[in-house]
Length: 353
Image 1 (cartoon, rainbow, N blue to C red):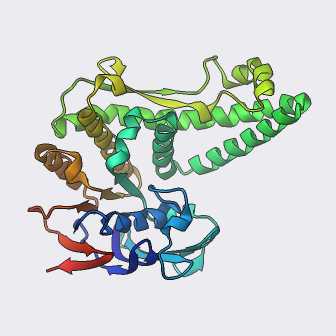
Image 2: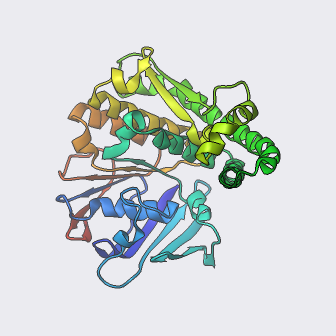
Image 3: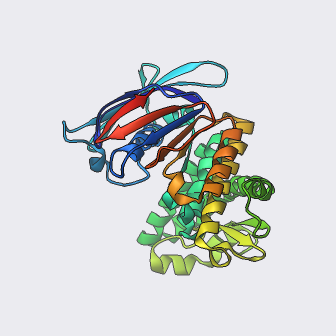
Protein backbone atom coordinates (compact mmCIF):
# COMPACT_ATOMS: atom_id res chain seq x y z
CA UNK A 1 0.00 0.00 0.00
CA UNK A 2 1.26 3.46 -0.92
CA UNK A 3 -0.12 6.83 0.14
CA UNK A 4 -0.13 8.97 -2.99
CA UNK A 5 -1.59 12.11 -1.42
CA UNK A 6 -2.40 13.28 2.10
CA UNK A 7 -4.49 16.26 3.12
CA UNK A 8 -5.62 17.45 6.54
CA UNK A 9 -7.47 20.52 7.75
CA UNK A 10 -7.71 21.94 11.26
CA UNK A 11 -6.02 18.83 12.63
CA UNK A 12 -4.10 19.85 15.75
CA UNK A 13 -1.70 22.60 14.55
CA UNK A 14 -1.90 21.47 10.91
CA UNK A 15 -4.21 24.16 9.55
CA UNK A 16 -3.97 23.11 5.90
CA UNK A 17 -1.75 20.12 5.15
CA UNK A 18 -1.31 18.92 1.59
CA UNK A 19 1.59 16.75 0.50
CA UNK A 20 2.46 14.15 -2.09
CA UNK A 21 4.84 11.64 -0.54
CA UNK A 22 7.53 9.49 -2.11
CA UNK A 23 6.49 5.86 -2.69
CA UNK A 24 9.42 4.50 -0.67
CA UNK A 25 10.83 6.91 1.94
CA UNK A 26 9.60 10.20 3.42
CA UNK A 27 11.38 12.13 6.15
CA UNK A 28 9.69 14.87 8.18
CA UNK A 29 12.07 16.93 10.25
CA UNK A 30 11.75 19.94 12.50
CA UNK A 31 11.87 21.05 16.10
CA UNK A 32 9.90 19.39 18.87
CA UNK A 33 6.28 20.53 18.79
CA UNK A 34 6.46 21.61 15.15
CA UNK A 35 3.80 19.10 14.03
CA UNK A 36 5.85 16.19 12.66
CA UNK A 37 4.11 13.54 14.73
CA UNK A 38 0.75 15.13 13.93
CA UNK A 39 1.25 14.22 10.27
CA UNK A 40 1.66 10.55 11.22
CA UNK A 41 -1.21 10.88 13.66
CA UNK A 42 -3.47 12.12 10.86
CA UNK A 43 -2.77 8.92 8.94
CA UNK A 44 -3.44 6.80 12.01
CA UNK A 45 -6.74 8.58 12.71
CA UNK A 46 -7.83 8.19 9.08
CA UNK A 47 -7.10 4.46 9.18
CA UNK A 48 -8.23 3.55 12.70
CA UNK A 49 -10.61 6.33 13.65
CA UNK A 50 -8.65 7.11 16.80
CA UNK A 51 -5.30 8.54 17.81
CA UNK A 52 -2.37 6.78 19.42
CA UNK A 53 -1.64 9.89 21.48
CA UNK A 54 -4.99 10.65 23.11
CA UNK A 55 -8.42 9.14 23.71
CA UNK A 56 -10.06 12.56 23.52
CA UNK A 57 -11.06 13.40 19.94
CA UNK A 58 -11.58 17.05 20.94
CA UNK A 59 -7.81 17.37 21.38
CA UNK A 60 -7.36 16.65 17.66
CA UNK A 61 -9.45 19.65 16.55
CA UNK A 62 -7.45 22.75 15.75
CA UNK A 63 -8.36 26.35 16.54
CA UNK A 64 -10.19 27.07 13.27
CA UNK A 65 -13.57 25.48 13.82
CA UNK A 66 -15.20 22.59 15.61
CA UNK A 67 -14.20 19.81 13.21
CA UNK A 68 -11.14 18.37 11.50
CA UNK A 69 -10.85 16.41 8.29
CA UNK A 70 -8.26 14.05 6.83
CA UNK A 71 -8.13 12.80 3.25
CA UNK A 72 -5.78 10.42 1.46
CA UNK A 73 -5.49 8.79 -1.93
CA UNK A 74 -3.84 5.38 -1.74
CA UNK A 75 -2.71 2.80 -4.27
CA UNK A 76 -2.64 -0.94 -3.61
CA UNK A 77 -0.16 -3.43 -5.02
CA UNK A 78 -2.40 -4.17 -7.99
CA UNK A 79 -2.38 -0.49 -8.96
CA UNK A 80 -5.96 0.20 -7.88
CA UNK A 81 -6.50 3.58 -6.25
CA UNK A 82 -8.87 4.45 -3.43
CA UNK A 83 -9.91 7.75 -1.87
CA UNK A 84 -10.40 7.80 1.90
CA UNK A 85 -11.82 10.64 3.96
CA UNK A 86 -12.76 11.22 7.58
CA UNK A 87 -14.38 14.24 9.20
CA UNK A 88 -15.00 14.46 12.92
CA UNK A 89 -16.72 16.98 15.18
CA UNK A 90 -17.16 15.91 18.77
CA UNK A 91 -18.81 12.50 18.85
CA UNK A 92 -20.01 12.79 15.27
CA UNK A 93 -17.93 11.40 12.43
CA UNK A 94 -18.34 10.82 8.74
CA UNK A 95 -16.16 8.43 6.78
CA UNK A 96 -15.96 8.23 3.01
CA UNK A 97 -14.47 5.58 0.76
CA UNK A 98 -14.32 6.21 -2.98
CA UNK A 99 -17.05 8.83 -2.74
CA UNK A 100 -19.46 6.81 -0.62
CA UNK A 101 -20.22 7.03 3.09
CA UNK A 102 -19.00 4.12 5.20
CA UNK A 103 -21.06 2.56 7.96
CA UNK A 104 -18.02 1.30 9.88
CA UNK A 105 -14.53 2.74 10.24
CA UNK A 106 -13.08 -0.75 9.76
CA UNK A 107 -13.75 -0.25 6.04
CA UNK A 108 -11.11 2.50 6.03
CA UNK A 109 -8.75 0.40 8.14
CA UNK A 110 -8.72 -2.40 5.57
CA UNK A 111 -7.85 0.07 2.81
CA UNK A 112 -5.00 1.67 4.76
CA UNK A 113 -3.04 -0.84 6.87
CA UNK A 114 -0.44 0.92 9.02
CA UNK A 115 2.31 -0.21 11.37
CA UNK A 116 3.41 2.43 13.87
CA UNK A 117 6.72 2.46 15.73
CA UNK A 118 6.90 5.29 18.27
CA UNK A 119 8.59 6.14 21.59
CA UNK A 120 6.00 4.22 23.63
CA UNK A 121 6.36 1.04 21.57
CA UNK A 122 8.42 -0.47 24.39
CA UNK A 123 5.09 -0.92 26.22
CA UNK A 124 4.71 -4.01 24.06
CA UNK A 125 7.34 -5.50 26.34
CA UNK A 126 6.76 -3.94 29.77
CA UNK A 127 3.25 -2.53 29.49
CA UNK A 128 -0.09 -4.07 30.53
CA UNK A 129 -1.56 -7.13 28.74
CA UNK A 130 -4.06 -4.90 26.90
CA UNK A 131 -1.22 -3.49 24.76
CA UNK A 132 -0.16 -6.96 23.62
CA UNK A 133 -3.76 -8.05 23.01
CA UNK A 134 -4.22 -5.06 20.72
CA UNK A 135 -1.00 -5.98 18.91
CA UNK A 136 -2.32 -9.48 18.20
CA UNK A 137 -5.80 -8.24 17.29
CA UNK A 138 -4.43 -5.70 14.80
CA UNK A 139 -2.44 -8.42 13.07
CA UNK A 140 -5.36 -10.82 12.95
CA UNK A 141 -7.74 -8.14 11.67
CA UNK A 142 -5.69 -7.79 8.50
CA UNK A 143 -4.63 -11.42 8.04
CA UNK A 144 -7.83 -13.29 8.95
CA UNK A 145 -11.00 -12.02 7.32
CA UNK A 146 -13.14 -13.81 9.92
CA UNK A 147 -11.42 -12.20 12.88
CA UNK A 148 -13.48 -9.01 13.16
CA UNK A 149 -16.74 -10.96 13.13
CA UNK A 150 -15.46 -13.37 15.77
CA UNK A 151 -14.18 -10.54 17.94
CA UNK A 152 -17.51 -8.73 17.75
CA UNK A 153 -19.48 -11.90 18.48
CA UNK A 154 -17.40 -12.62 21.56
CA UNK A 155 -17.61 -9.01 22.78
CA UNK A 156 -21.38 -9.01 22.36
CA UNK A 157 -21.82 -12.34 24.19
CA UNK A 158 -19.48 -11.22 26.98
CA UNK A 159 -21.44 -8.01 27.45
CA UNK A 160 -24.67 -10.00 27.72
CA UNK A 161 -23.12 -12.38 30.27
CA UNK A 162 -21.83 -9.51 32.40
CA UNK A 163 -25.29 -7.94 32.38
CA UNK A 164 -26.81 -11.25 33.50
CA UNK A 165 -24.20 -11.54 36.25
CA UNK A 166 -25.09 -8.12 37.62
CA UNK A 167 -28.79 -9.04 37.62
CA UNK A 168 -28.11 -12.47 39.15
CA UNK A 169 -29.91 -14.28 36.31
CA UNK A 170 -28.48 -17.78 36.70
CA UNK A 171 -30.93 -19.27 34.22
CA UNK A 172 -29.73 -16.89 31.50
CA UNK A 173 -26.12 -17.75 32.40
CA UNK A 174 -26.79 -21.43 31.73
CA UNK A 175 -27.52 -20.66 28.08
CA UNK A 176 -24.99 -17.85 27.66
CA UNK A 177 -21.97 -19.74 28.98
CA UNK A 178 -21.89 -22.11 26.02
CA UNK A 179 -22.04 -19.21 23.56
CA UNK A 180 -19.35 -17.20 25.34
CA UNK A 181 -17.12 -20.28 25.55
CA UNK A 182 -17.49 -21.15 21.87
CA UNK A 183 -16.80 -17.59 20.68
CA UNK A 184 -13.95 -17.14 23.18
CA UNK A 185 -12.16 -20.32 22.14
CA UNK A 186 -12.47 -19.36 18.48
CA UNK A 187 -11.01 -15.91 19.17
CA UNK A 188 -8.21 -17.42 21.24
CA UNK A 189 -7.30 -19.87 18.49
CA UNK A 190 -6.90 -17.04 15.98
CA UNK A 191 -4.72 -15.04 18.34
CA UNK A 192 -2.57 -18.09 19.11
CA UNK A 193 -2.06 -18.69 15.39
CA UNK A 194 -0.78 -15.15 14.92
CA UNK A 195 1.44 -15.38 18.00
CA UNK A 196 2.97 -18.59 16.64
CA UNK A 197 3.60 -16.94 13.26
CA UNK A 198 5.43 -14.04 14.91
CA UNK A 199 7.37 -16.39 17.21
CA UNK A 200 8.58 -18.39 14.22
CA UNK A 201 10.13 -15.30 12.58
CA UNK A 202 11.22 -13.03 15.39
CA UNK A 203 14.69 -14.44 16.12
CA UNK A 204 15.83 -14.23 12.52
CA UNK A 205 14.75 -10.63 12.34
CA UNK A 206 16.42 -9.83 15.66
CA UNK A 207 19.70 -11.12 14.26
CA UNK A 208 19.28 -9.00 11.14
CA UNK A 209 19.04 -5.80 13.17
CA UNK A 210 22.09 -6.81 15.20
CA UNK A 211 20.48 -7.96 18.46
CA UNK A 212 21.87 -11.23 19.89
CA UNK A 213 20.77 -11.21 23.52
CA UNK A 214 19.35 -14.72 23.41
CA UNK A 215 16.44 -16.56 21.79
CA UNK A 216 13.05 -14.91 22.14
CA UNK A 217 9.91 -16.97 22.63
CA UNK A 218 6.27 -15.89 22.48
CA UNK A 219 3.59 -17.76 24.41
CA UNK A 220 -0.08 -16.91 24.16
CA UNK A 221 -2.00 -17.29 27.42
CA UNK A 222 -5.71 -17.82 26.82
CA UNK A 223 -7.04 -16.06 29.90
CA UNK A 224 -8.22 -19.27 31.56
CA UNK A 225 -6.37 -22.22 33.11
CA UNK A 226 -8.89 -25.06 32.80
CA UNK A 227 -8.85 -27.50 29.84
CA UNK A 228 -11.78 -25.67 28.23
CA UNK A 229 -13.16 -22.15 28.55
CA UNK A 230 -16.61 -23.51 29.40
CA UNK A 231 -15.17 -25.27 32.46
CA UNK A 232 -13.65 -21.99 33.59
CA UNK A 233 -16.92 -20.09 33.18
CA UNK A 234 -18.90 -22.70 35.08
CA UNK A 235 -16.29 -23.20 37.79
CA UNK A 236 -15.93 -19.47 38.46
CA UNK A 237 -19.60 -18.56 38.20
CA UNK A 238 -20.10 -17.82 41.90
CA UNK A 239 -17.05 -15.57 41.97
CA UNK A 240 -18.24 -13.83 38.80
CA UNK A 241 -21.70 -13.30 40.33
CA UNK A 242 -20.14 -11.68 43.40
CA UNK A 243 -18.03 -9.35 41.25
CA UNK A 244 -20.61 -8.72 38.54
CA UNK A 245 -18.22 -9.45 35.68
CA UNK A 246 -16.55 -12.31 33.87
CA UNK A 247 -13.08 -12.86 35.31
CA UNK A 248 -11.64 -15.22 32.71
CA UNK A 249 -11.46 -15.35 28.94
CA UNK A 250 -9.80 -13.71 25.92
CA UNK A 251 -10.37 -10.27 27.45
CA UNK A 252 -7.88 -11.36 30.14
CA UNK A 253 -5.42 -13.00 27.76
CA UNK A 254 -1.76 -12.05 27.45
CA UNK A 255 1.17 -12.57 25.13
CA UNK A 256 4.11 -13.65 27.28
CA UNK A 257 7.53 -12.64 25.93
CA UNK A 258 10.48 -14.70 27.12
CA UNK A 259 14.21 -14.25 26.56
CA UNK A 260 16.47 -17.13 27.60
CA UNK A 261 13.50 -18.48 29.53
CA UNK A 262 13.02 -15.28 31.55
CA UNK A 263 10.39 -12.59 31.21
CA UNK A 264 11.70 -10.11 28.64
CA UNK A 265 10.58 -7.13 30.74
CA UNK A 266 12.93 -8.36 33.51
CA UNK A 267 15.75 -9.83 31.44
CA UNK A 268 16.24 -6.99 28.96
CA UNK A 269 17.49 -3.43 29.37
CA UNK A 270 15.32 -0.53 28.19
CA UNK A 271 17.35 -0.28 24.98
CA UNK A 272 16.98 -4.00 24.33
CA UNK A 273 13.25 -3.78 25.00
CA UNK A 274 12.97 -1.07 22.36
CA UNK A 275 14.86 -3.27 19.90
CA UNK A 276 12.56 -6.21 20.63
CA UNK A 277 9.48 -4.01 20.21
CA UNK A 278 10.83 -2.84 16.84
CA UNK A 279 11.38 -6.46 15.81
CA UNK A 280 7.84 -7.41 16.84
CA UNK A 281 6.36 -4.62 14.74
CA UNK A 282 8.57 -5.32 11.72
CA UNK A 283 7.78 -9.03 11.93
CA UNK A 284 4.08 -8.27 11.94
CA UNK A 285 4.57 -6.03 8.90
CA UNK A 286 6.38 -8.90 7.16
CA UNK A 287 3.53 -11.31 7.88
CA UNK A 288 0.98 -8.86 6.55
CA UNK A 289 3.03 -8.16 3.42
CA UNK A 290 3.25 -11.89 2.72
CA UNK A 291 -0.45 -12.57 3.15
CA UNK A 292 -2.46 -9.49 2.21
CA UNK A 293 -0.64 -6.24 1.43
CA UNK A 294 2.43 -4.32 2.51
CA UNK A 295 1.41 -1.92 5.26
CA UNK A 296 2.64 1.66 5.41
CA UNK A 297 5.35 1.93 8.09
CA UNK A 298 5.31 4.99 10.35
CA UNK A 299 8.54 5.46 12.34
CA UNK A 300 8.14 8.32 14.79
CA UNK A 301 11.33 9.84 16.21
CA UNK A 302 13.37 6.72 15.49
CA UNK A 303 16.64 8.68 15.59
CA UNK A 304 16.23 9.56 19.26
CA UNK A 305 15.11 6.06 20.22
CA UNK A 306 18.24 4.25 18.97
CA UNK A 307 21.94 4.88 18.60
CA UNK A 308 23.19 5.37 15.06
CA UNK A 309 24.01 1.70 14.51
CA UNK A 310 20.59 0.49 15.60
CA UNK A 311 18.83 3.33 13.77
CA UNK A 312 20.48 2.35 10.49
CA UNK A 313 19.83 -1.36 11.09
CA UNK A 314 16.11 -0.87 11.86
CA UNK A 315 15.69 1.57 8.97
CA UNK A 316 17.40 -0.83 6.56
CA UNK A 317 15.24 -3.73 7.71
CA UNK A 318 12.10 -1.63 7.42
CA UNK A 319 13.11 -0.61 3.91
CA UNK A 320 13.73 -4.24 2.98
CA UNK A 321 10.02 -4.96 3.45
CA UNK A 322 9.34 -2.85 0.36
CA UNK A 323 6.83 -0.78 2.32
CA UNK A 324 6.39 2.96 2.08
CA UNK A 325 8.21 4.52 5.05
CA UNK A 326 7.39 7.72 6.92
CA UNK A 327 10.03 8.94 9.40
CA UNK A 328 10.14 11.91 11.73
CA UNK A 329 13.07 13.47 13.57
CA UNK A 330 14.66 16.65 14.85
CA UNK A 331 17.82 16.19 12.79
CA UNK A 332 18.37 16.25 9.05
CA UNK A 333 20.28 13.01 8.37
CA UNK A 334 21.99 11.78 5.23
CA UNK A 335 19.69 9.24 3.59
CA UNK A 336 21.15 7.05 0.88
CA UNK A 337 17.77 5.74 -0.28
CA UNK A 338 15.79 7.80 -2.76
CA UNK A 339 13.36 9.89 -0.73
CA UNK A 340 11.46 13.11 -0.19
CA UNK A 341 12.21 15.38 2.71
CA UNK A 342 9.70 17.69 4.33
CA UNK A 343 10.43 20.48 6.78
CA UNK A 344 7.79 21.04 9.46
CA UNK A 345 7.62 24.37 11.28
CA UNK A 346 4.69 25.62 13.37
CA UNK A 347 2.25 23.31 11.62
CA UNK A 348 3.39 24.17 8.09
CA UNK A 349 4.87 21.32 6.02
CA UNK A 350 7.07 22.21 3.06
CA UNK A 351 8.92 19.85 0.75
CA UNK A 352 12.65 20.50 0.47
CA UNK A 353 13.97 20.27 -3.07
